[in-house]
Image 1 (cartoon, rainbow, N blue to C red):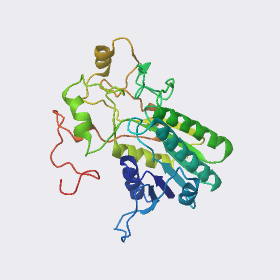
Image 2: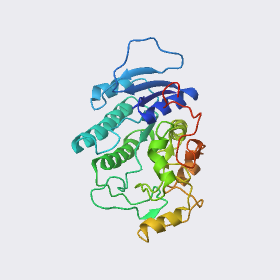
Image 3: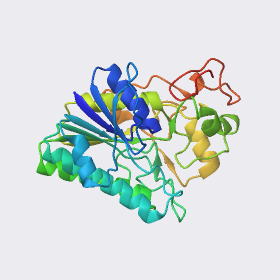
Length: 304
């Protein structure tokens, strides 16, 4: 299919573009980064710079597309003013959706966030009610990033009510790749007491990209929301023990699919989307949380 990928030069978009092209799709990569006037290298996608908070830019890039993958966003709420995060993330999605409806796009894949329930950037203390967190968990966001993502999911619902387009929302866990595994997860591998709001969860960017391909190619009707995470936790420690040790009885531990389970459930994605993750943190890091020799990929400078 002809697929538009927004945020194509970010960590999620970059991996998604590569995976979609390997799967045989015709990809138009879109981002705010200025283009260069150079001949395309072999295997390089077509690229267009666009500011998606401008409706005209959104309409321009969606024209002739059969599917849209919307990964463009300010990635968290603490490095921009709150109103900027909220306006950018919500209006960019609205403009892309509106253009997709008007041009008759068949499939829209929206990259939301694991933060939607509200437990990642709260101003007042907030913990999930239970683990593994699934799509049925109550949603009570406090910050402008999670709130915009939540409203974005409601926009996806509205699209299916007013058009024949089918939609999938993906809520990725904390995205890791060969260039940031050691920085982000290394401390947790070495010391279980280094906590993160998503309860030792993560997702490998290449597994996430595979799930995006599945979403683009899916025939699921309506709008479905899926958490995408790795099935294991950082350090592969017993999750029930970790939760009890660091959170007491503040978080309910429900049935776990494995002893070293992630704090995020991927059961729905496995059943309905056919999602089968293939990678784990230990493919990249040793038991001391250091990058293993010979690790290569999209996110390391040439020569490393």
